[in-house]
Length: 421
Image (cartoon, rainbow, N blue to C red):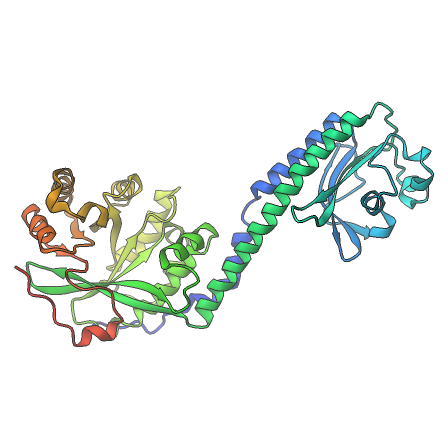
């Protein structure tokens, strides 16, 4: 039986920090657009300050602020009571949206800021969402009057406010979706709703199972599993799911026969982190492990991934590139990561017995793998005709429904491999 690592650490404990790092990673496209809208308004109307405010629990909170270089009147995150602001009065209709000089307006003079700042020109437009809710205001002002401001300027401001409202509403909806998905993934992991299935990797020449690919299934079907991984990757948690599944998969190694290996999917996003080293820390012999690099993420630094994987490969772990023949990314993976195993994608295998172009591509990959001393595995083999064609091309390691569908590992304790021609 295969040796079992005793120090597998559950990556779920680090979910919170993973989420925090993802959320803080970069400025959103919404932030970029809103800042440029404010900058354009500031320049066009010669404001000293332009800002977007949000109404929160009776306060006006400054969410975005653009100021002239020498002006420090308003700061992001600052707030004051809504009743003391221009914003509330403009939304209520007691103050006009365009004021050339607040010092001339008796109602404006009742607001302390008019005298304290002081406020000269002021233009403010309500920010309304599609359902009519008022988010806050889109504003600009200067400490000096500007009697050249006119209805045309107010129209310009309203157009930009409409754009800003759309951007903010879509951003809020997207953030809510992201948070909901974070919570769903958190619940899947912490409530142990993720199960593993295993699919045999079969050597048709030797007539035996050489390994099992570890696959993920969930007991809560709010998303198809492929869609779940796509969306988790989009919000930066694809690697977290991969690492959780690898840690669970390692627990099954004690049930493997001697010489069999566990094959686990590893996204480039996970491979770029130190998480793999953490999962396998203290395990000296990784010869019963294959790491399959998928196409889920864009690889920006192959040398960094190679450096992170090198110590694991030195301890016996083998590297596989998944989905070969399905796209350009897998070919780059092969050329730049120099794997031990290449897995031919199901799209290349499907009906290969009836497609001469697929046969030609597969034949080229077989020749390439022989020259570079890579093993070749055909995924998604479903028919004996496909198998016969693959064997004729020199492919003898296969995976697919012809051998077995993925099942919980207990299924294979009484499983008999099919007899193949």
